[in-house]
Image 1 (cartoon, helix red, strand yellow):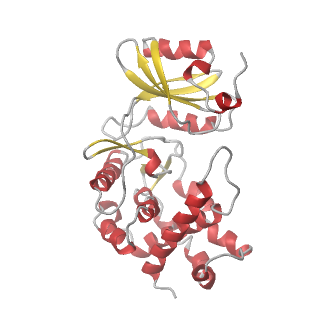
Image 2 (cartoon, one colour):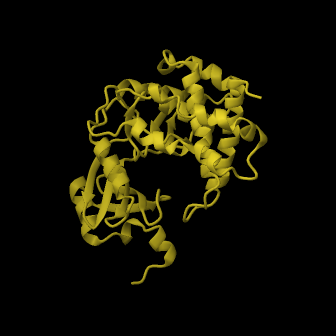
Length: 314
């Protein structure tokens, strides 16, 4: 049977080789009787909810063995077996590594939390991040890369933009470009820590499972560092959801992980996040996606506004 182009881009459970499906069922100790295809994380990947013969539901995702993204799933599998039960994360049940790399988790049914002003779901998100900081310190993954090694080279967007300034760069950024470049690395001394960080926090990786309950999913980019980095990385998404900069600052002041972090280091990390979003928004659209670069441009704009409010630069 020849699969359509769409099926190849979004294979279902039944498109996996029979030996891979059999291995998953054998490790779970039950036969799959129903599958509900979910949006995959990567082009060519599989994501599905599976109903088992014994009444359980599980969530499975996988990639063919030759995929360049398999490294992300290997990293997630290594994290999954070491996450403590008290952490607000799904439980990794099993993995199959053969013609396909398949990860199977407890099924997490819920919705994406709303981060806008007045949303009680934002409080649940912040509570979940606090729980992560507590339960994942000390870092349970000995081989997790250092956060600064991961993020330092990545978050140099303003430096790259200064090397070849685009004609349509906004006036505030043009006027303050040298200051932005100087500041976008000054958070580095405060990045060191012994907490396992998620490294890719955004609303799509948060699941509201009930009133006041949020789970954090998709641990593909784990790193060891200071817990406040994960929290502040969510700020652009809070701003994009409608929060004013002053509202975000009030929320941050109440978070324990920021108690000993100087305000200028938080601002510097915001500068770095804004620069990364600004630079990334000007790249070609990633394969099999729409709207990613426009969303990054929106994140860059709101984060610049937050930085401007904290620096008072002209």
